[in-house]
Image (cartoon, rainbow, N blue to C red; front, side, top):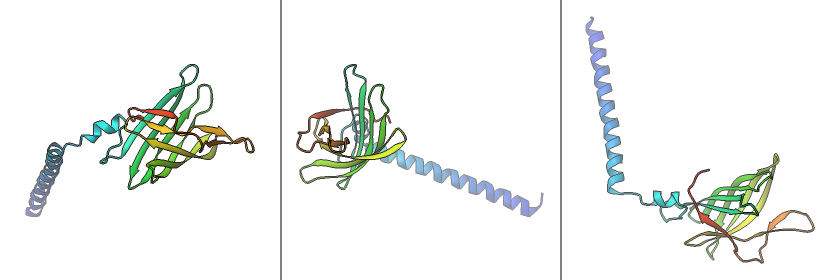
Length: 169
């Protein structure tokens, strides 16, 4: 072996060793940080509770004559801004799936626009929610007679209850 080859081989081994030490140190550091500062909100986020730390929550409603209609909402709230997903599956109908974007209002209600796909078409619907300690409440929809479109019934109370659930979509 030439001295240059031996030098490169030793340098590569040293570099690999240093890289492994750095990687192990980073792994141990993040594990220690997680142990010293346990994030109890992970359990909360999985069960739908909005916490100051994660600002994530998931909610579901099952309804209909055969209890097969489902509505699933996943929310992320940060600095008064709301984003998330909403999926509405009505039994034996085409599902509506899409994204929510909105904001938290002064009265702590949430106004969001749901942009969804249904039957290959994109549409939007304004939605009003109220986050309570035990549920996500929604104002019901009504059909606007002039256009035949579904809209949020702004004069109604928050009467549609979605219960906390695991975040699965």
